[in-house]
Image 1 (cartoon, helix red, strand yellow):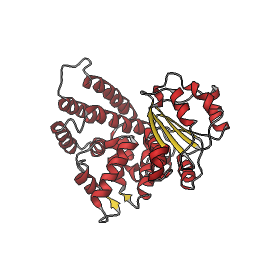
Image 2 (image 1 turned 90 degrees about the vertical axis):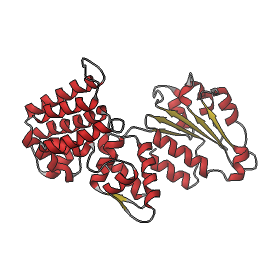
Image 3 (image 1 turned 180 degrees about the vertical axis):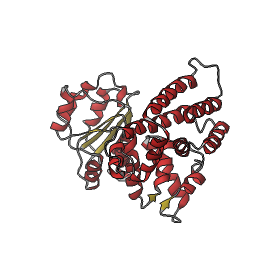
Image 4 (image 1 turned 135 degrees about the vertical axis):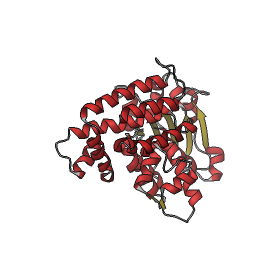
Length: 334
């Protein structure tokens, strides 16, 4: 089942006896769990019928004993098991999964791990009416679309460039993005329906002029002055602009630029589809291709690997990341 399927069923008050939530993306696991905690039972029912357990403090036997209790003055009891990845042998849960209690809603958070599909537990959960959900990490090129959908549900939209800058600053950590967007929503109130770069700069602290998106744009354009201005800004605030994040971001751009060089069809829609980018940004890559041949791109990628290692202390006497970044960008552009 998908995340949306699960939430819709919960909204319709169609409950399953087991929700086994696993995978490397904690955001969806937390969202489903929090929805169940907040909405399944009334406040009066929660006092006797809602229990939260932690894998590091309990064991599967105690979870099963709790799940086999009957609710008090309610149709259901809710058992939440957080940090279930700490259990030594999750397969011991099979004895309950084969015969779950319909009046219990058991939610198991199995973060950063997945069940072995070859084992009985995997098949038993769904066979006996439970929900098995794998929360997968989004690829970088999927996060922008996710952000648009997330904001739409809140009655907001976001400027295309603001979307890109926000994601490049926060990465693909959905929980972190959701948290920052919520701060934005509260700060903006009913004043605006579209989030702009100015909103992000004012409320999150990302400069609309000095960020990784603008740096890469300057590099693609071989705009030495602009690139140096951004590097100097980064050097003044290295904690907010770690060189490892910057090199990884530039690496991603040049990987796409290499792919661009070998595309047989360089029309806007074909490039956007192949590189998985918004058509709005295709001109950045056509500009980059004019300034960097395929051979030069290979050299740049090699440089990025070298300087990433140097920034981590490998074969380098330079400890100032600002100086390292300055040298790196100089070698890329020249």
